[in-house]
Image (tube, rainbow over all chains, first blue to last red; front, side, top):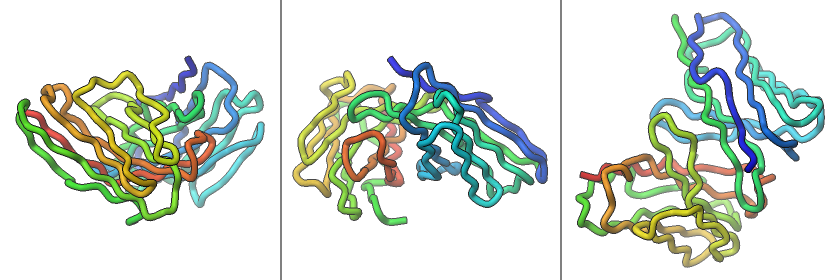
Length: 110
Length: 114
């Protein structure tokens, strides 16, 4: 079945630096969704990408959907301590099921 | 964020106990979900209800029994659980059961089975 893979699993970042996390699907996706889960919290929807090659920005976060609609990336610039958490990508797997990646857990060194 | 609420937030139960988890959504959504989140594992979909009808049972053991009395409420009845069932149980809702819609999660119930 359709699987969504994320890399890296962990990202340790110096405050102020940039980083990118990647999401890859074994099949073409109709859309990709990104969620953030703060430590001790629950997943919160961030954004959805639908079009091939689409790029969306939320302040310091840039989300991109690949041309083939099988991969996506999240790039964070000038990382802050508020960026700490786990970032999940998710794509439709079949009727009623959203397949979540394992997530990238981000820690920030001040 | 109070769109989706869950009670209790924490639960400790023995293997012979029976307990229930409750979820309520105030978003007017038509689909509700139960997920299990264990340490170092991806989110595992357990059950999906769309318009109060169960449409997905993702090979979940019978010791977990869901109930959806209306589109705003979802329960997960637990009985004779195992220690490996200890996890964060998350409820979510969406506009419909179509996975192209984003999901809104509740704060979760942290379950410990002793």
